Amino acid sequence: MNWISEWALPKIKTLFGAPREVPENLWHKCEACEQMIFHRDLERALHVCTHCGHHMRIGAARRLEYTFDAGFSRIELPRVPTDPLRFRDQRRYADRLREAQAKSAMDDAIAVAHGTIEGHRAVVAAFEFAFMAGSMGAGVGEGIVTAARLAVLQDAPLIVFTASGGARMQEGAVSLMQMPRTVIATRLVKEAGLPFIVVMCDPTTGGVTASFAMLGDIQIAEPGALIGFAGARVIEQTVREKLPEGFQRAEYLLEHGILDLVVARGAMRETLGRIIGLLRVPLVVPPEPEPVVEPLIALPPPEPAATS
Ligand SMILES: [Zn+2]
Image (spheres, rainbow, N blue to C red):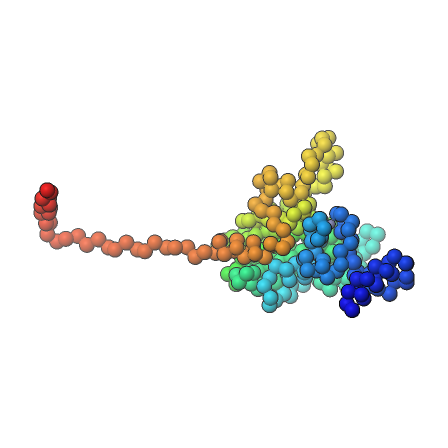
């Protein structure tokens, strides 16, 4: 009877415009091809459109779930001073922050967890775009620093999934300071000889692109992800030229050497596992040469052997 209640009934009700007792989110519309996809199919396809392959934006919690093997643990991030500038535009920043926290059940726009990926230990930080457009303020900076320290402590690679509109305007200079701060955090990982992998998701722009997100040992992106610093329209107006087809998209950047790989969501875990496996192969140290003992008496050279 499942198919009747989950598939046939909603379709009939939509057709006849019956009152909406069916939860609205049973069917999702793909923004790219506008086809409808049933929520279970969408979940099974990791939120990739089953019709056109469009990679939909997903939250940090799902991202961690899709990336790790079963049994990972999320860590609590240190608290940072909220609203350091007591900023207010049309609304108070503190109010906006509270609202975003209530909506997403997160303290800020980043989640950090540790666990295994295809059996390899790893620390993953994932941006939450739904939280104030994944903007980077002190909270997100703290998240990256904590993730980097955890990676060093656990002797594990650091993987960051980015999805951000850039700096958190409401934190002014404090937000800008997160750029050098996160860069230094990634140095900690590199100095410990650990891989730092960046997976750029749709969209990765502004201060995040201009700081740690471009410094990965391996730069990966999801198909179709928008990656850039300034918006295409701003660039077009500045250079007064028409920008090429696919400008600032993952595939274009791969073609032009900014990225190493564009990996579909369904293959991400396996790819990350393989990369970590390759990068973490223990180095083969050549054995120490045997010490040469000088003979006490110089012996005459051996007679050359008779050849027939
Ligand atoms: Zn689609």
